[in-house]
Image (cartoon, rainbow, N blue to C red):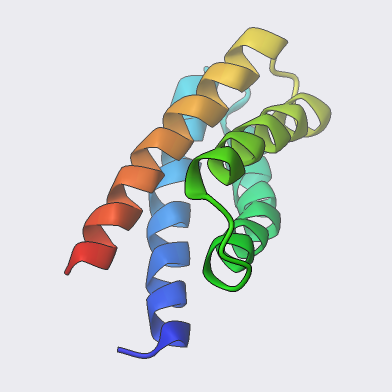
Length: 107
């Protein structure tokens, strides 16, 4: 499988995992905004993180921790979520999507 198709599969998995999870964890009245924010943030962070790890050979874990931080800040800026909930959503969503990414790459 080519790198472009692999990337698109990973991006799709990320969006399909993170946006619904973020919306579900956001709570009533905040789900739509959080869903939209999740998609927007992932369209920003996913290509950057993938490029740094694939093309620049950067270590995966520090990049992923930066992604969690950027997305937590993004949720705070784009939604009415508090710091704790925004951080928890960013962490939970990225842990699950990272695990899915590892499983997809193992296939």
